[in-house]
Amino acid sequence: MASSSTNNFDDFDKMLDERFDQVYDQAFDHIVSAHAARQQARKPRKKRVYIERDREDGHDRLWNDYFSEDATYPPPLFRRRYRMNKALFMRITDRLSNEILFFQQRRDATGRFALSAIQKCTAAIRMMAYGCAADALDEYLRLSETTAMQCLVNFVEGVINLFGDEYLRRPTPEDLQRLLDIGELRGFPGMIGSIDCMHWEWKNCPTAWKGQYTRGSGNPTIVLEAVASHDLWI
Image (cartoon, rainbow, N blue to C red; front, side, top):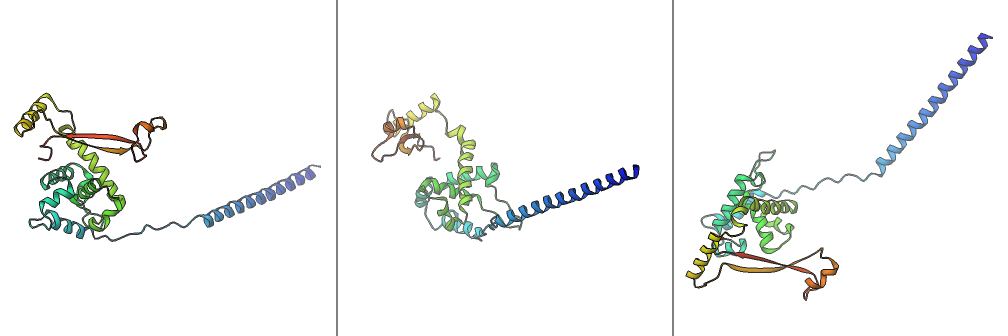
């Protein structure tokens, strides 16, 4: 009787082991098949296209065009294309390259110099001065669209952080009096500074307000005003 019970338990254990192996094999085969299907369905990873832009040549050409002693383009054209004189541009560029890591020219892993500070600052200035697309700067300045956008963002943030306290502030009573005195000497009594304005498209204007901010163009705009004294560029 005891021997018969033992044989029954052995047969039952053997049956459980076989059933477990069968379930395990089925589950394993299912996992392997599902993984293979996902691998086949997955799109092949696209390799990033590398373009050798010869950034050193871009720096040399820019330097010879505007910054060398016998530059190709005279100061009036520099003032027109940079919206400032060369001395002010170099002052801004020097401060940015000395105090902001993004504008410091370093070597890459191969030992080559990266883009220079004047290339990066010129990219930002050109985008603001002409309202051109970032991709339009590639052929002359030798930098990609993504890098040009980074130049613009870092340039704006750097100018605000480094020069905001001096130039982007409300005038003090002493400042106002000094500007009034200078204006009177120049034949403009009562004049504090010259003002300019532009209409900036308001993309997210509330529908209920659209009629109040729309002119002939049909798009709502906000008027941005800026007042500058004569010595801003000095």
